[in-house]
Length: 108
Image 1 (tube, rainbow, N blue to C red):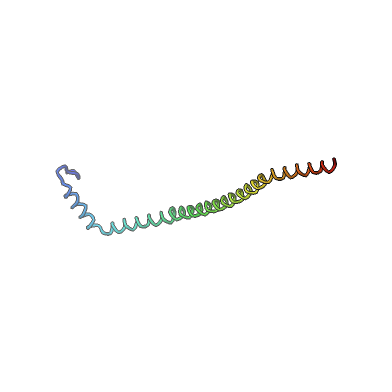
Image 2 (cartoon, rainbow, N blue to C red):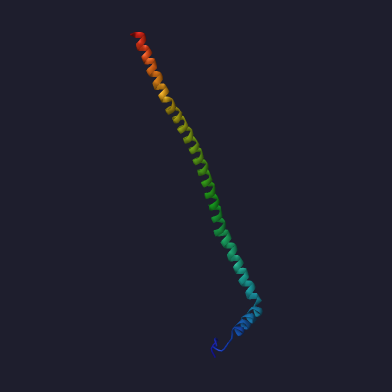
């Protein structure tokens, strides 16, 4: 007779599986041991290096953010200095024109 019978119920399969589990505790322990070993190896060989790389990249991103913030502060300071010079330019021009007019008046 075939291993799979059409007239078997779900309970029959469940009972058969249950009996296999209870009859083979050594095999279950071996399977659990293998699964534990696989998971431990995955953690050591894959997860840990991946986490270290993520931490390394996060540190590099933070360094770049700090450098960018410093660059932005320096740029803002330069722009502020330029704005101050631009604001003073009309005054310098007017002062130079006044001085030139006074010089012409003294000479002439």
